[in-house]
Each structure stands twice: as structure tokens, then as C-alpha cells.
Image (cartoon, rainbow, N blue to C red):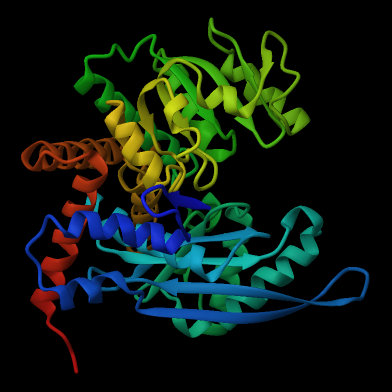
Length: 422
């Protein structure tokens, strides 16, 4: 849980998101009533999911879907399966999605969903039933023109295939554009699995250029080695970066001369863990965060860099691969230390950008080669980075505040243009 040192008040995830919003909004001359409208989620749905386990026992799960904004288009955001999923967390993630989509200029609002469960204890059969029941419960709230779910923590293309099929069965026709992140044979997009990691690569490269750091040979530490972290490691390694440390929930490891990332990825596929990798030294999670490096990529869950450990960070650039990895208190400390932070709503927007490409391709029935997907992503991410950097320089603000300012202005423009129906 995040804390503000000034008054020692704990912040929930949603309060943290609103704190960031308020800091940016204070620099804009906007009617307070409109700002309040932009802050609050449009719709929050809680559903109860009875699932018959393989042992015959009936068990209840709780699911959520939040639509924060639909001003700029359908809501867009992932669905996560995790034992710590709460409505507050989903509200925060949906809000961040609104700003993320606005920053990269794609025509979506923010949405997010989740089920409070531990998928590691569930069989494939149980996961399918849980996914289909959840989809059925939120059926009237989702659709290509309403709200488009996608994979997130502990969900994957197979989960999306079940969601798409459930929606399609009720619609009595195949509706591929209802979700993104699907397998390629049923309307998925080339480049989607690598998209978030590629967006991290692009924005980190642009940040290094801005700070006068040679990207080739840059020392990189990556906290979290799931899809996002491993893809970022793979792509940055291919670009000549030296990945000196990585971690997952089981442990962390270091090699100051650089880890062999292709071999490490194969090791993780075999063992499901980064630990015990030949040619590396075991370190603690705290040691990874505080390791001296050019670029630190927190790519796991929220609030890993806090007021109690921010002063130990020795990276020159932090690229936020995860959502909300830095608390507001830590943000202030890091900015005072002169560390350049690429905020999550910019840094990890590659995933939703290629999700948008998938949605477009599904709707027109014509699919692009991976090279074209990557080229289009490159153009959008570089432009977004430079737009945020320009805003930061013009207003003498941090990249995070500048990103929120840019996003708020874009959502505000459309909201005022559309007016308020009453």
C-alpha cells in the first residue's frame, strides 16, 4: 500500500490514480465540475460467479468490470485473474487506461476487469468455466462498440478465445472484435504478444537518446519476468542492451557482464523460474531494485518502489513496464534525485496500441504482416513520447505530470465537444 509521507495517509490504488490526476489537473485551467466528471468511473459492475470445481464442490468467485470513460470511443482494458483483485484496483487500472489511450491517440476510453481467484490452483476445465460464466455475466456491457476486453495478469490468448466464443454464441454469429489478444487463427494480430515489451523498448530508447545515454551497451535491470518483462528483456538484448539483472516471484539474479537472455528465456520455459540459471549470481529483490544501472524496468505489480526504498534506486532512467509501480511518495523522491521516469501510461502503452490494431483488423477483415504492425507501433510510440516530453519541457513538469496533462486535455476536448446529455 502506498503512503504519502506528508500526512502518513495510506493511499488505495484508486486514490493513487486520483492523486496523479489532481497534480496534473492543478496545472490546467479547467472547470472543477468537468474535472470531477473526468475523474469518476462511468460504470462499475460486480458479478458473482458460481463455479463447480472438478471435485464437485460449488465455489463462489467475484468478478469486476469497470468502464472509466467512453468519451473517445469504446472502453478498452484487460481482464486479470488474481487473488488480490479488488474493485478499487480495477477502478484505478480503468482510469489509467483512459489516460493511456489518450496519450497514444487511439479512439478508446478506459476499461478494466478482473476475477478474484488463484488461477494456479485451477484446472484448465475450471478456468474455462470461470471465464465463460464471467463473460456471460458482463455480456450486455461488452462488445466491439461498447467495451473491448484483453489479456492482463494471469490471462492469455486462450482466455480471450473463450471470451470471444461465449460472446459469439450468445450473439449467434462470430464476433472477433469483442476482445483483443486472441490467438492468430481466430482474429489475433501479429506482434501482439511482443507489443508491450516493444513499447518499453521504444520509449526507453527515446529516453536514453534524450539523456545522452548510448542505448547500445546500456545496463538494464528488469523486475518481473512474465510476458512483459521477458519480452522487454529479449527485445532490448537484441538492440544491444546489457541485461545485468532480472527477477520473478521466486528470486532475482545478476551478471554484471550481461545475462544470456535467449538461454534464460529457455531456462524459464523449462523450470518456470529465473533462479538457478547458469552463469548468474543470486541476489535479493531489493538488491535488484537498487542495482546501479542505466535503465530500470519495473514490470510486475503495483507499488514496488515506495517511500521506504526509493532513495536506494541508482538507475538513471526508470521505464514503468507495470501499472503503478511507483507510489506518489517515491515519485517525489526519485524526481528530486534527477531520475528520468517514463510513466506507465506512456511506457507500457504498446500493448493497447497493438490491441487497437487487432480491433481494426478484425473489423475490416484484413490483416497486416508483423513488420507493418511493428512499424505502425514505432510511429505512434515515438510521437507519443515526444509529445509528452514537449509538454514536460513547456510546463517544467515531470514526465508523469506532463503525460496526465496531455491525456486530460485530449479527453477534455472531446468531452466538451460532445457536451453533457441530461
